[in-house]
Length: 170
Image (cartoon, rainbow, N blue to C red; front, side, top):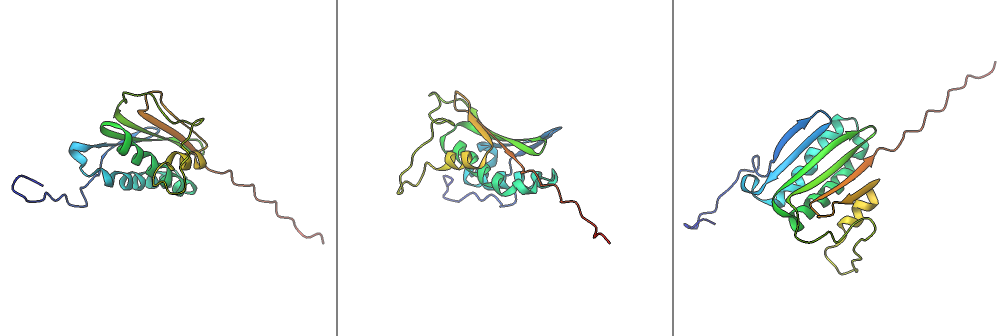
């Protein structure tokens, strides 16, 4: 709300787009709170960008897992990160992708969670399952010591070789 009581409206087509930078081996999507506004829209935009890029890399089999993992990592960065910037970095790896999510600043406390130490939410907890999902879907993952970056890798399952066709003996 502004001081006059009027609500500022950001058109949906420009809300939370993030700045997209292409690299030789991938892309970076950077959200800045001052520019991209409503942080609740960032996970959806990040899912959309990740899915499109994986399709372009012919890694469509990873799209569903990547959407889930990206959503969790961007949401965690928004809720628990420091600074006003969140970056999603997708890097192509042979048969897969590495996802990095980084906040604009390191936290003032060392990391709490990591691959060897995950939360144990109880049935009624509304939060605390995101990193459990990341661990379940990612091939590998970790959190930087200062808690400012989380990365994971997703690898496409190897396609079994087609069985050779046999001709009938005649």
